[in-house]
Amino acid sequence: MVADGLAQFGRIDTLVNNAGIFLSKGFTQYTEADYVAVLGANITGFFYLTQLAIAEMAKQGSGHVVQITSSLTDHANSQLPAVLVALSKGGLNAATTSLAIEYARSGIRINAVSAGLIKSPLHPVHTHEGLAALHPVGRMGAISDVVEAVLYLESATFVTGEILHVDGGQSADDAGHEEHVQGECSCDGHVDRFARQPGRALGDGGETDEAAGWLDGVERAA
Image (cartoon, rainbow, N blue to C red; front, top):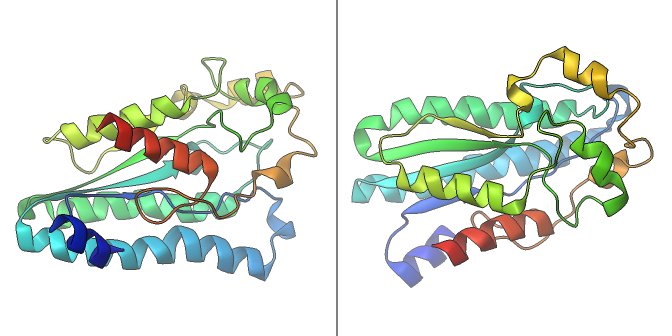
């Protein structure tokens, strides 16, 4: 992918690490195959592709890398158990701050967008009301919310090492909100539908139709 970008554009200015798998299950229900799949997509793919991209950015003395992570990394919710998401996306958050410092004087910025639940074809319409209740603002996010966050980070040249929360207030909330929405989220029976299947996306190769929408929006806006 990096080679293709260089062949077409002659340089790599921005990498959006958007590929991944979101799989919600109870901790003891995860299988070895689940572990390999989620960590492979969310961590291994990020690691090797970002290595290649940053190597090129270092040669040109500039660049920007953005990870799409999840608010579940720092706002656990018993109604949406997802420890593999927390493990892998939390790892991306940690890598974001570490790389930001490592490359701060090389002209390369590293940031992340920590997203809440985004309204897209990934989530059937009948689940929207319950999922909206998981956010203090009372609604799910829109694809455009994530697009605008990525574009902000792209234009904010003094910002690096930032984990930008685009989650309707989830990261600022405490356990009181989860208690408030107990019984309101119609997620039971829907958990397996959170498993993201491969799809098309810009950035680092694609994770879902939802992801494709986010990054297609970035391309159009740019």
